[in-house]
Image (cartoon, rainbow, N blue to C red; front, side, top):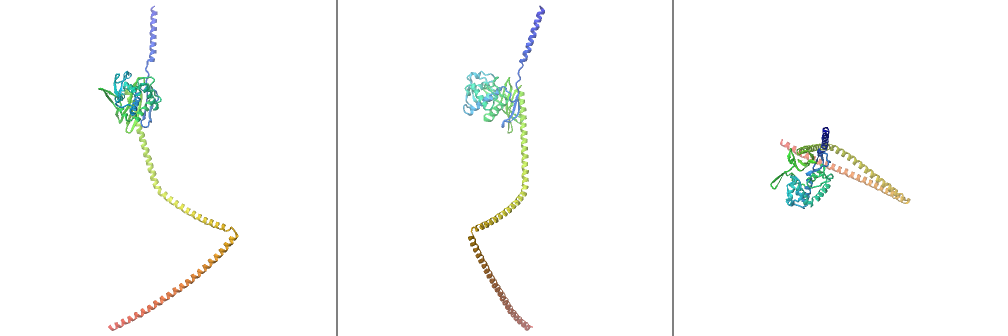
Length: 424
């Protein structure tokens, strides 16, 4: 009997141990998927990506879409920052994190926005959804429609707060699109994401994003954090350095510190990458500018030679064109003469008349030329005679005058000699 009981006892222990081992295999927790992405906020260019299309729960990053619809209602003037929002029973029943409102309490739209950004209050998110959409379900439809407009095809929203839900899924790539839309479409409301502390009814609510501020020349000024056991520690961050802005989304962090360290590393790497690109682009521009200057200087040096050659070529072309014009004119005259000869050969009578007239004209021209020649000869002879007579007359007159002057001079000299004799 004792042996029998001992055997039964051992079998029970072994079965319990086996069941315990069997249970341990399925009790192990699932590790949340890790994913990250970095992109340029202006161009949307992806600088780094790791598992960007893995679907996971967005957690409190869902409130970015809630805030986007609130900003849209403010721009369309459906609500104002001073509009009072009533807290319903459904909103008051939400689980933390929350402000702790009771049913029937009120909060302004401005304070509600700051409570979502800093405290990530679930009760305030539901209250805003009910006020804008009429109910949370209608507001969720608006969220999904806006997601489709932004081409967030891997995202489905089920609530306005981001509370854990297996069917509420998104990707890092879609959260990047949402973050970029908030920055570009609502720049007047975007500075609210940089608030670090929110005071409400004597309580201080700090922002869960501990990266806000400047660190190593990089200033982080948004956006939102989130945590759910199924997805781990999540964050969507935007930072700027100089004139450049970068967006980083990280999902699946084991702790908040490790998540923040990964974000800082991604920010430094991405800004260094952009700086290298900018440096290379500047060098290319400088090299291109130097090449252009060299080409201009070479062109200016060669322009003189080119102008000389061009002038020579132009002069050659002008000479050739002038020769062509002369040839064309000669051809035209010959063609005219040939045409005139062709016209003169129409009939024999016309040719006889033309021939007689030509002979008569030629005889007349010859007679005229002979008469003109004789007239010229006569005129030349008469002119020659006149010239000789005038020359002879001039010489005679000059001789006579010279003789008289000699006689006069001799008389004077004689008188002067006589007078000199008298004096002597």
